[in-house]
Length: 459
Ligand code: IFM
Image 1 (cartoon, protein in one colour):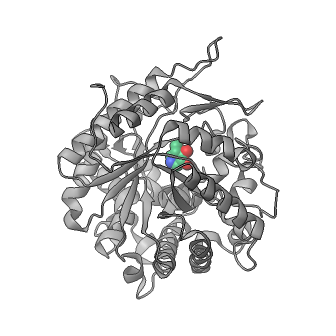
Image 2 (tube, rainbow, N blue to C red):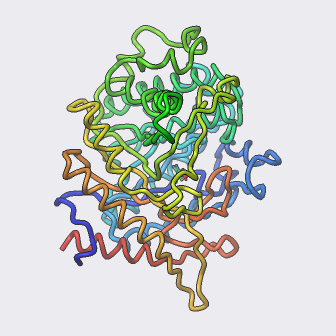
Image 3 (cartoon, rainbow, N blue to C red):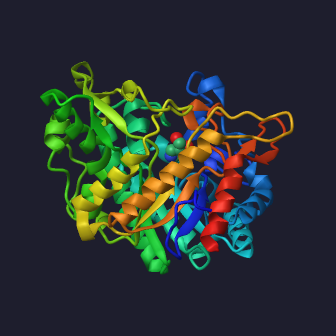
């Protein structure tokens, strides 16, 4: 099929989900509350008051979802583990029923010939840990290392690929600065402390995964391609700050063992006055990884917005104005995100130019689009926009590989329509439609397209 971008033999094709977005069963089998239970049940926090209480009911329907994955033909399935199913309060006693759920999921994936890829933390922090300070405090990083050791001991022999954290930018900055994610805090320094403790937690988790001898361990970042709105000095300076706030805060400690050189000009006294860093942290954080996971969706146009600099809470996350409307001629997804596949190529090639051999092999751990899907009278879902998004982004990924970036795999986001955090169920990212009344699954055209791409790749 000439329409399909061609990938090298051994390239991993996968699909991804996350626990709180699909599992439901939030009060079953000893699962403790997480910060997303609290947040979504707080009036006004999520669109339509949506919660993850039922979600896709994957907790009960996982055999059906594994069968859909098998028919899709993916090599690998990326899921996340809900920490509070394993330790209801984030520390102490281990809940055998929680372990058993993920053990059964992993076994059924292996039986279907699919490699499990487990994310240890996709934002659903046990509420009990948040009550003790959450990611603002170092203790949470230490507990995260202990929880990782439990999971690696139980599943390390069967799960070859482990991701410590998913998109720590969202945990730290949407969670503790912008307040649009759980726990909904709006702080300046607290968010910077959270960012640092997430990195320390990653380091402890890497130690635990190494001790258990797992095959591959890494982290997933949502790096941004920040494009200046104009060539003015103010907008160019805003891009430097945006790069620091979104990218360098992670990539510099992880890949270069240092803090960003631009952190003082970005955060001023909020970072110079900090006391949460300790000697030895950078060594722990920067230990070698087997891969770097990257989630990519869209570029961001950045313009200076001095009025936001006055607010310390916003200043740590983004003191710039996101001028996403500045792509007047490109299609926008249902998230109002501009569709610019070339910027995916640029993000990856610039990363390679910046870090050279220090950049480990890359897995694209998420890429996909929310669209205004609807089901036809005959029960089909013709999501042509999503197919086009996937096709052009896979071609852009291939272009980055041709330019020398070592990319080993690609996971579509998402297998299922699911709970899109503060935006609830209205945004549909799935290649499989979920009817939220009946919980029936219906593969969309994009599922068939991806299935054919994988079959063509194998052939
Ligand atoms: O749904 C999210 C996912 O949980 C993390 N990455 C981005 C996706 C789309 O917003």
